[in-house]
Length: 484
Image 1: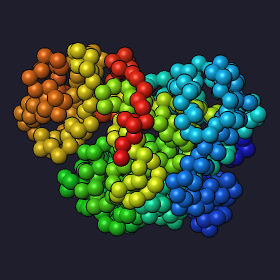
Image 2: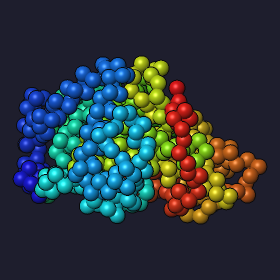
Image 3: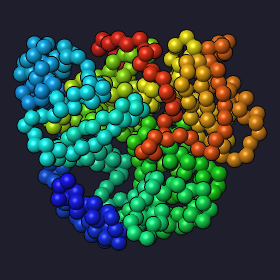
Image 4: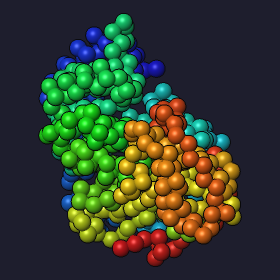
């Protein structure tokens, strides 16, 4: 563990010390604050992103090709896995002239990286300089991922650049609604308050005492940005919808992270908080990063960050593939993300951005349902503009057998049992199963809470089947993978 990490652990071990340190840090000028938290790479990359978003398409693609060539040459010379792979395929990275040159190489995925972890680490990057993060996600495959300081700084500069599109600044008053909050010592209260930050725990939303206390704190704090998980912010919005919390004023945007943002969640949050919900798309692997369009539901892909592709894995189902350009410590080429999306290669009609954009990032490939015939059904439209779900706070599907699903419902309030019949009827319609009831058995149960991952993430489907066995996997041509 490095010196900075040791200092960070010490500061966070005691709430009084942490609050004092954060108060000082938050009140520093932006340049000094970023210099302490990150470094010169962060500042230069942030400036580069602002400059390069004004480039035309030709210049953006030329930059990508140049960066891709450099990364592939580095991988071929310093990363054992790619040195061997390029040799087997007769691939000469120095001859890279276009993004299409990538397509002669095979895809990689979590299993391959997990089984060859040392082979993916660059030999010319000192091990002691690496940052290690673990991920499993909805695939259930544990994976250790590595990056260096430059990659971390470029990543966070990209995040800050994206958030700035909806009014975020380092001086914004930010309300964060999260899960467990560690304060250290005996003072273990479910909130933190320092400088321009207020952090509250959603685990105490069922306490009338803490709801009132939170409301008073929020009113006095006057937040400009709310930062949370989509599922947590949906629950918070329900309290406003039910009249337990009065509507909030002055919110510029709600920034949601770490989970897929579903259409019904966006609608619920925006209606009750009277502001825009802003979501970004990224991953620990640092292969693709996309920022929500400020004028539509698209996500604009940062070309400076990575090279996106799509891979058809079923009828109308596309998997996102990415080659990261910022992480030289553990480069991943043509990495399958297990996320769904449609890549648009033309200018965004809503905001005129020249960046490629992604549509339909509403859950991962595991968040589908399988009928008795092995056919895939997607539940992303369930609950959207639905009167049947008006009294439902949260819902989640569970499946471990083809053709059988369990739907868990969390009620907002007491309601009649007939709601289950109405919801079952709507499911048959949304999933296209009317007249085909024998293909899917649906059981509905009412629960106090849905299941979440160990890190607290919510998914609309808790899928125990290996979805890939039911996908008709094939690569698509550029003409049918890209849409206008």
